[in-house]
Image (tube, rainbow, N blue to C red; front, side, top):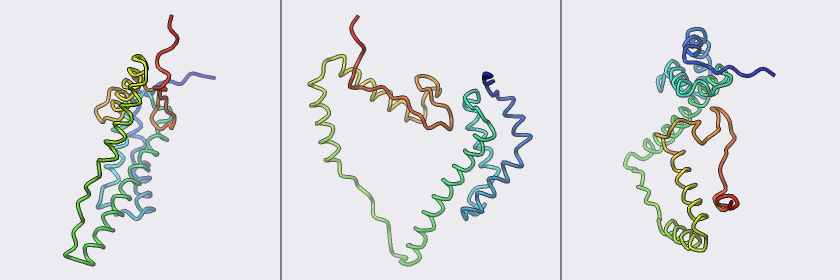
Amino acid sequence: MTERKPVTAEELGALYRDHRTSLTATARQAFRARGVPESVVSAEDIVRTAFTRALRDPAAIEHPVGYLRVVIRTEVANQARQCAEHRRLETLRTADPLRFDPTYCPDFTTLVGNRRAVEQALVGLTLPRRTAVWTTKAQARHRSSSLAAPANIGNPRRPGSTTTAAPNPVEGPGPKA
């Protein structure tokens, strides 16, 4: 089996020149299939967004054209959801012009109760295990932030993959040496 050659930014530039029109046609077709008018966002903008995402970490992409098509379809699906929600709200507003959407205020009592239960459970753990739990929590928060470090640091996921690698926080560190 041959080893995969990483994709470079220059190759993505060549892909943009060679496949831009077909990818734009893919975006337009997806817009039509989902009933999203191109006045919401242009197909060219969706293609540019896909290439922008690909340029974040081009070496991690195995099949660039396929990856770009998936990103385009995902972006169009997101736009379709937003458009459907907007249409739903507009329908409600036209039915009752004096209607206003109530402000949602979540109930925090359950959150506080859960937090206290977790803190009580942590008291029963040894210091190394407690440290492992908090470290794992901090790493998960870091991974979910939009300003996270490059994706390959501590996270073996590739763009487009569905695998996850999460450490088990309860086991704590390995055997003592």
